[in-house]
Image (tube, one colour):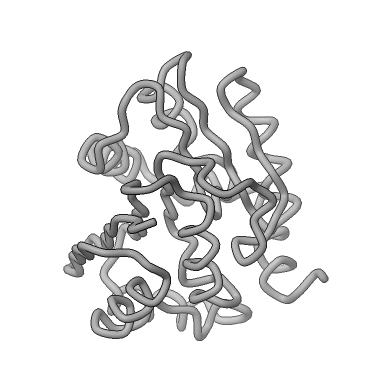
Length: 200
């Protein structure tokens, strides 16, 4: 079903890349290094948009690794495919709450600028747990604090007005419910980063 969020992001797809500055991209490159992406990994970019992280991730995993992007916006997914026609990158038009992958398929999940927009965040975490290998990590990343993000979404309005990340306490409970452990959460101006390990 094509809901209001899909329609919202479909309309933004063509101009989405231009919303990220050179400074944003530098910060993202630093974060990709910080979260421990290594050669040979198979990474799921959950809510990949137009593939902002693809070039950083595909270079980090190398020819022996693979990056799979998922987005529920058909237009975002199509743009990502056009932007990154590389042998170690693929894009799937799918929803984070119903991932079309086998259990224990991935070495890491990265959800950049996407988690607030998932229709059912708990279900998305359940699916992340399912498709991640044992002891692998999920990384939820925003280039703004939760407070800044709420202000941005209220300003933008429309479908994303009420999209946010739960409080730290609630997010920890949600991660634990989906069988993640060792949650580490940073939330300060310019960054939100939640990292947790799959306890499968």
